[in-house]
Structure formats: C-alpha cells, structure tokens
Image 1 (cartoon, helix red, strand yellow):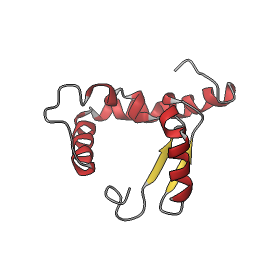
Image 2: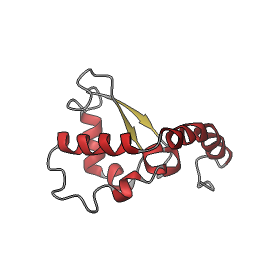
Image 3: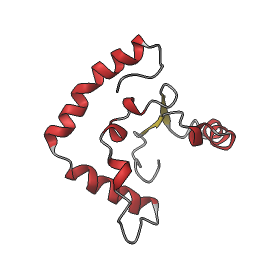
Image 4: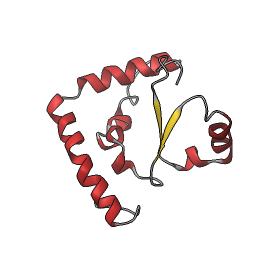
Length: 114
C-alpha cells in the first residue's frame, strides 16, 4: 500500500476471498490495520469489484514474459492494462454499481445474478 499510495490515501478492498480470510492474512490485517484503511465487502462477492467485473485479472498475466517480479512491476502492468480498457466500457461498469449494490441488498449479501 505504501508503494502504490505513498500519499496515504489508498484503501484496501477486502473482499473476504478465502486466501484473504486465512488466519495468517487476518492476523496481518489486524496487526497493520492502523497503516491503511480498508473496505469490508460481503464474502466472496466479485460482482462488487469493478476490476473483477471487468475480467482483467483473468487474462493479463497469462502471456506476459517475464511476469511482474516486484510490486512496482505489478502496479505498472495493472495500470497499463486498465488504461487500455475503453472509457465507455469503464463508464458502463461504474454505472452498473448502484444496480449491483441493490441486488446484493435484496439477497442480504448472498449470491446475485451478476
């Protein structure tokens, strides 16, 4: 977080995915909770994460040679790939969020049709 958001304004999106909710990860988050802010999301809800909704993580590293080796390399790759997405597509994702939130509230945090 300090590399990507050295201004201290970054926020970690905690999506409660199984690896993020492990004992080790949970302990680390508790020990470092004063170092950054993070959002709590419903468990395993990729439909609430625009990056996952865009499908970007599914393909950006498949054919990359060499793969990113440092956090800064990773940030550079992610930023470059994100910037390649068409602006209208990103706008559509942002505009879909109120509907996604409403659907999630209707099912009280359970699975949605997204």
